[in-house]
Amino acid sequence: MATTTTPTHLTLDAAVIGAGVAGLYQLHQLREQGLDVRAFDTASGVGGTWYWNRYPGARFDSEAYIYQYLFDEDLYKGWSWSQRFPAQPEIEEWLNYVADTLDLRRDISFNTTIESAVFDEDRNRWTLTTTTGDTIDAQYLITCCGMLSAPMSDLFPGQSDFAGEIFHTARWPREGADLAGKRVGVIGNGATGIQVIQTIADEVDQLKVFIRTPQYALPMKNPSYGPEEVAWYKSRFNELKEILPHTFAGFEYDFNETWEELTPEQRRAKLEDTYENGSLKLWLASFAEVFHEEEVSAEVSEFVREKMRARLKDPELCDLLIPSDYGFGTHRVPLETNYLEVYHRDNVTPVSVRNNPIARIVDKGIVLEDGTLHELDVIILATGFDAGTGALTRIDIRGRGGCSLKEDWSRDIRSTMGLMVHGYPNMLTTAVPLAPSAALCNMTTCLQQQTEWISAAIRYMRENGKTVIEPTQEGEDAWVAHHDELADENLISKTDSWYVGSNVPGKPRRVLSYVGGVGAYREATLEAAAAGYKGFALN
Ligand code: NA7
Image (cartoon, rainbow, N blue to C red; front, side, top):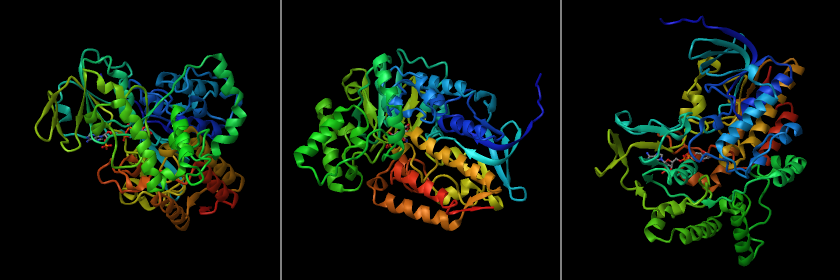
């Protein structure tokens, strides 16, 4: 017999969508400030990205000890990592530790999906509706939905005809998937695909990797951490707290020498040294010119190609797997462990789909445009996300005068510092376009900054008797112009990837993340606040 439940209605000061890295901290801050606040998440547990991305091989590309929150020394030191770049289960455990230590669970509604959010101009409040018809009335709507959380999973005609199993990496089954002895196809070789491919090659019977665009990949050095290493990084808490918010990408390392001031030998030594670090250091702390100057980009790209060639050896593999038509670092740089060597195995076949794209999926497998059928038991879609905008456009968000965020962003993707959008009063955003995020930022560094800015803005409003905040048209125009000016000078703007939204058909092209640096962004947001929220109207 079907059971019916009566929809509930909640009234809050603030509703937070998402219980990942941003949502947990936002909830904590606003609760500490005395607000009646609650977080909502589709998932059955905390973690956001680290709840959903439980595919084989999922792990950090940021050093674990810089990915932690830095607002509370005891919270930081109460957790010990087992590796420099730990895997998803440990990261999910850490976020559970955070939720438990801060006693956050009592203010989170799990298994709850927000379907719509409508701003009522008469009352200056938001009404959120869940997929089960519950409603939430809140003064502030705070979106902590993640930059990379709306999977691109419905991509090929015929997907539902496939007789085997299809998984998108970000919707991997909690109980795991049995790949042993199976014929498995992986579509996509971005940061995610690379982690999956290198991890499952051993386990599966046959692995076919469908490759459209090759990637520059850097080898990861991932030592285990014992008591000595843990004591070492914990002793650096104050130093890290001082450094991270001010660097280009929110990491502990930064660009500190220019290409110009070094001799060719010194440049080479620097590239070798940062490469040997086994991290993203070559990308985010060798030469900033790699993002702006074609010549530097060409030389650094060739350095990485040389390293890849030495490992791949086979010229055909080199052709297929080493990029030649875009510069190093203009895509997200993946870290890998024996990824290139995977293609030397007998059970692994790379399939180029650059000139012979995937046409459809049929009951038996994947069919390419020339009619070739690749028979498979399992298809893994490592095909990425509708980054930055997708999480919010999948919710029906209506601002002033009924304007729709989905419609607005389908014409032009705009925001004010990635913190608010003109036309959507009292909606405060994290991990949305036009702020440093995911692309060129250690996420926790950026999300701490953004949530702290939001909490401070709300405190300011309460202390000053204000109830509505909204970026002005002029304020938003100025930020968009500044963002675009920096973006247009950056070689990222010339390369196709999720960084510019080109992976989503019809998405307006714009460099999604702010490329002026995490430190510079932070200064700009703090200056606006210190000037009485310059660029925002407060009433
Ligand atoms: P990415 O980096 O967007 O990679 C998606 C991959 O899927 C990429 O190799 C794509 O090739 C490929 N793809 C997508 N659609 C197709 C079709 N139709 N045919 C063939 N190949 C396709 O997503 P990830 O999940 O790896 O990483 C996202 C971020 O998560 C990452 O940057 C980190 O910040 C964490 P393409 O390059 O478009 O030719």
